[in-house]
Amino acid sequence: MPTKSSERKLRTFVKGAYEKAFSAIGPRKWWPGDTAFEIILGAILTQNTAWKNVEKAIAKLKGHRVLSIAALRDLPENELAQMIRSSGYFNMKAKKIKAFIQFLDAHYDGSLKTMGKENLEKLREQLLQVHGIGPETADSILLYAFNKPSFVVDTYTRRIFSRHHIFSETESYDAMRDFFMKHADPSTFNEYHALIVHIGHHYCAKGKPNCGQCPWNWIAP
DNA sequence: GACCAGGCACATC
DNA sequence: GATGTGCATGGT
Image (cartoon, rainbow, N blue to C red; front, top):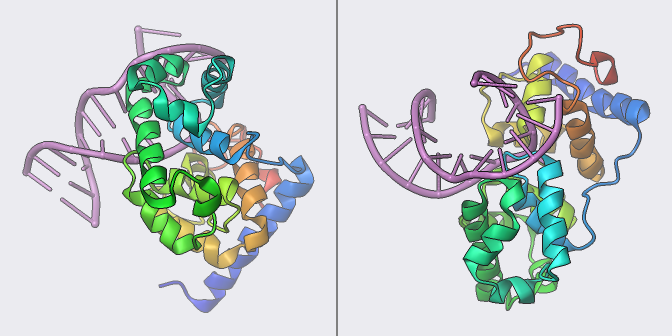
């Protein structure tokens, strides 16, 4: 149980980190993707995968003119898997994409527009029931495809903020999400996560706190 | 060749 | 509830 003064420090760090990062780096204008559906596909395809490999997969889908709900609904799973090879785990991800479309058809008559009218908590609960959609993917979809204020936590969030001793390296996903939901401004959730990913690319995967190479000055007071 | 990349499901203790 | 493992390509 954090004390009131430590709580205040954390809140200050969270707000300050965003402001520092924003002024150091500038707006990221995320998520990269033209439509809500493309964002959802990207969220699934980027699971534990470098974005560059996802771009190739999405380009291939576009090239075959199957980057739409209707086209992917009819495309056999094994053909879909081959098109998204570059994103890795392609058999699993093809199954996940199919599972999402089945969910959309079953609950929202295949309409993302209808789906977007549902409230955040209900949607999150439903998304987490879909095969292949865990907390990060669910929050990415909610925040970037549907503009709902659900903070996205990822491997970089854990890495960066644990190195700054804001929370432990083994902190649970929900605890970290709750932390940002409580301490950050909802209107910044979108940019905040985008900035974290940008910063994360500059933090060495292994490394001690303040190893001298990671750009601490981007967020530290 | 090792390690990493914007996770998740499932088995087992 | 914590811990371990399979999934897989592509860049450094």
